[in-house]
Structure formats: C-alpha cells, structure tokens
Length: 251
Image (tube, rainbow, N blue to C red; front, top):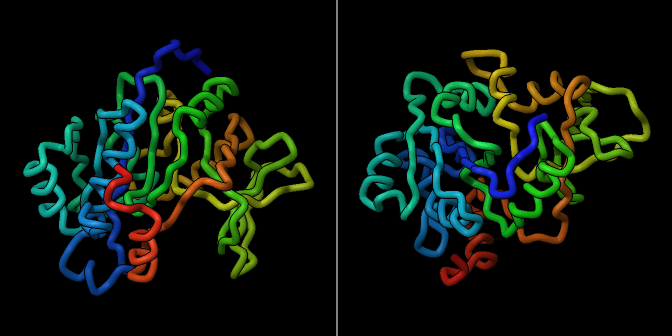
C-alpha cells in the first residue's frame, strides 16, 4: 500500500441513491437524503460533518427523486463544499456498483471516505484516518459493539474475516481464523483509492461482498468507535430519536 503524505488529500462519497423504503411515507414523494433533522436535511448534516475534518470535495450519488437532491445542492451552493453528482437515475447500483460508477470523480486523493447518507455520528474521522494510514489498510471499517442483525467478523488481529446475518444464520467466511469477533458496521469506511481499480466493474452489487472477496489478499480492518454517538436514521422512529441526539446547534 502507498504511504500517505503528512497532509493527505481526502475526498468523500455520500451514498444517497437508495429508495429509503423504511422511511415511508416521506420517501414516497422525497429522497431519503432530504429527510429533516432539526431543520437540516440528512445530506446537509453529513456535508457539514465532513467539513469538520477539512473534507470539502464530495461526490453524492443520486437515483430516487434525484432532481430534488440536485436542486437542494444547487440552491444551497453545496453548503460550502464542492459537491459532484454521480447520476444513477437509470438504475440504482447499490454500494459497490455506486462507488465504481463514480470512480472517475474520486481520483487524485490519498484516501476516500464513503458513508451512507442516513448515518449521523460524531465519530472522529481524523482518528480513523490515522489508523488507516498506520496500518496501511486497503479498507478501514467503522464498527461498534452494539447489538445488530448483521455483523462483520474480525479475528484477534482486527482483520476482517467474514460476515454474519444474525436473524437468518447465514454466514460468509473469507478467512478461517477463529476465534472470530462480531462487530456492527457503522456505514462509514475509508478506502485506499487504488482499490477502486480492483472493483468487479459496472453493475449492481454490494461493497460487503467485495470486501469479503478482498479479505484473503488485502488488509481490511475494523475501527472500533464504541461510545461515540451514532444513529441509523432509516425509519420515522429513528428520525425522531435523531432530533434528540443531534440538536440544531451541533453543526
């Protein structure tokens, strides 16, 4: 893996193309990215969150009510960041296909932060980036010890070995290195940009499946930020909970 400079150039991609079916009825007429938490859309919260760490070059992928997202970005002049649209209006490509589709917009950086638009957190990206650089990781995955329905599985050296669906019992193992420790994924990852060349190509697929394919040959590690404020704002109930966790004055 390449060594990063003392002041690495970091870009970000906010995944905002999803249908947001759990957030209905709002998402019957709006994109999930524009759901409001204390007067700010989820997209604005995350653009301002990234700005705290000096990350102002951001790609946003769009599909569901794409025009509304583009209009909001234009009207607000990117909330002070340089926002680039990756257009998936023809077909929503999921996380892996979405990153591949946007790859040309993600060039010329030392590290790439990819996050879901419906995640709100106070995770310290600088700390996560420091680990990513120190370990020369291909991918660093933000995880916590919370109870969840799906888990990434790590070995004692914090290396990704597999994935488990707790509800169905389905398990995918890329490395057999027991004991394995389940950690819940936080929807944020830092990717070494050269790894974009290793993506399977165009189409609709998940980054999770890609990571499991990479795990035997590359270093993919967890960054445990248990104790940080974190919420997946995917339902009307969690939208209400987010208003208590993230007051309007926070960002």
